[in-house]
Image (cartoon, rainbow, N blue to C red; front, side, top):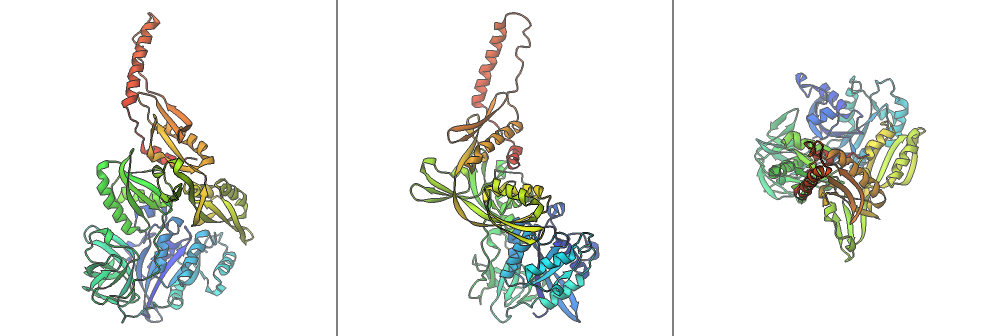
Length: 595
């Protein structure tokens, strides 16, 4: 055990975590040279295309230090705020963390958020200043920021460059010297924490775990404590570049287990593995259940794909434990699922993964947050979907979730950012200057205002400099109304939304205008209306595609033409009664991008 080191890499998005991980793997020759490429641990097409890490990735490296052989278990983590749950799981499986800060951008919101998480878990922090090879790197200034934040000495900060490979050996030496060996005893009962899992169509569920106490041998009879299911440890091994089987793993090791589990619901991230004959007394603590922030309906485009969609979401949930789902149905879209996501990027990624990895075309509805409805009978209902709202006469008041948002920005953009936050019903709580030209602004805001386009607007206003992080605080009473969209008098439940009363009129009008552009013209007029209860607040009409029935009348009395037009009018009227309007998928997506 004294030669094992478990560590993760934490940083803000785009500060160079995956690049530093590449250099560490190269230096320790953990990846064959012919397999080496940029972002070697990011194995999803989506991660490569967008240049972001979506999943935590674990890999073991061998390193010789002072003639001793060390096993370094690295877990690379995502930087985007929507994937912070992945970071919390990685931190739970480690004793130390590399805190990477970009020498050109300095401390940003997610850096602070991840650092606090690591400190709460008593991890040893190794500060690394990355990208020092760039011309605009401000090494002295950023070193002072890191010292202020972590309380370390200047000598403790490692200067590195993921691009050139400078400082990589110092990082490896610091990991061996500063990070403590894993705690735990091999003689105790087996206790192993599952921190991730994947589904393999041939071998079933493969779970990644970290052994806290005890030992595990191939062929042992084991049980999972949360589900109380029993299995055989058919294959165990370590996570090298590929899965490498071995006969025995002991306390402190990070590895994988294959035990022919075919149903994905039997494995829960954060569960404890123990022996069947000699189980441990209690499960490992410290794994919180994730709380989704944003809810949206996900429906198959073809109704017969419903069961396939269910099994695909279950397999995805295995790989992404922060996804939650329950079945629901909609008049417009049929049967589907109400899914909970950590944010809009998370929602977008899940949609793309369903389409790419499982080949299912899905329609997603307008995202909502969950509201608490207090009725006149004194009941409290949790509503994720506006269609679940009780009759307005039975509602006493509605409460919506608020968040504490931390924004770190250059001082030039403070005015514009404050205006944006106040327009989104934010209340300024605090403002502190980190340095002379960088400030942290703390706002309390309704989550529903942040869900749509807040992050995009923040980046536009600050030319990409401002960084944003948030956590949910509590629920507060709010003046909310249910805005419905009617097509020819019929409500489209998938487009209905709960919205702040003062914003309803403008939002309803923009929605009607947008739908007018997107709904294809029919043989009859389509009335698009936005309504609050029985009151219509906006209307647009999609004009009918009209055949010129009077073309054959040349000359003669006007009554001949009128007779033909009246006949056409009767047909249109009858058609409007039986005709239904298809809302294209682009209309649902356009609602998300309303500006």
